[in-house]
Amino acid sequence: MEVGLLTDTQTLPFPDYPDIEKAYVSHLSSHDQPKASEPLKLGSLTQEIQKAREHIKTSLDRVAVSRPFDVARLDELEKLVTSLVNRISDLESRIGSLKSNNDTCDVVKDKPDAESDLFASDSEDDKEAERIRSEREAEYLAKKASKPAIVAKSSIVLDVKPWSDEVDMEELTSLVRSIQADGLLWGSSKLVPVAYGIKKLQICCVVEDDKVSLY
Picture 1 (cartoon, rainbow, N blue to C red):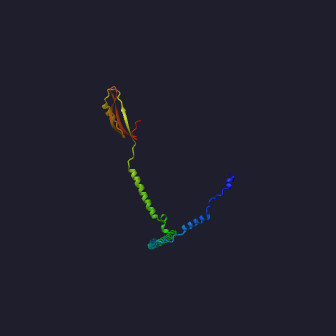
Picture 2 (picture 1 turned 180 degrees about the horizontal axis):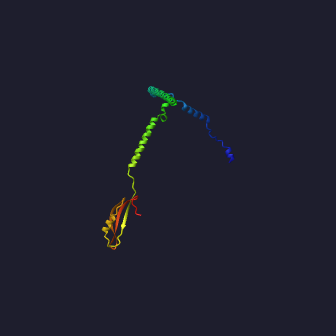
Picture 3 (picture 1 turned 90 degrees about the vertical axis):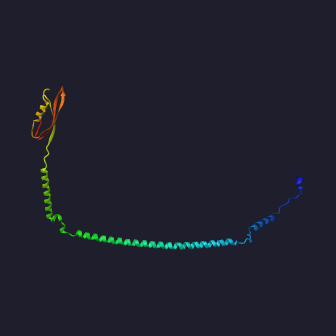
């Protein structure tokens, strides 16, 4: 078998690599070159120029609009500052006036004034006040003396029992009421049953404690 391989003189085809590489490079270079035959479109260029003009015009309009606004704002700020300055000046003048008035009051307080001592020098007013006070005290005492004195009184309920069932209760009531004394005042009376048909006399009276005593 080794003899057969050595005697085989058939050659295999060898590719031409340099020619292949050259053809590949030529192909790449032909695709990278720009096409010179494509002219710029005039319509797109005109549109870009128109857009630029509109942008410039819009910017100018914004500047023109903002300018009067800024001027008006500045005028308003100037008026506000002027008003604040005037108010501050007014406040300063008022403070100065108040301070001068306080100084004047302090000077007046420091000066001795003999005529203002009403408690020590005006004896006539003291006498008049004393006279009025005395009159009021006298009126109060007179009014108090004219009032009637309060008399202490007591209300008493008396039970008068008969000694037998034959006692005339009407006559007994008359006899009890016949008792008279200074400071004694009889009131209402009634007959109250006790037992077995016997009744007792129950009578009310009012007595002055200083004049009548039941003990």
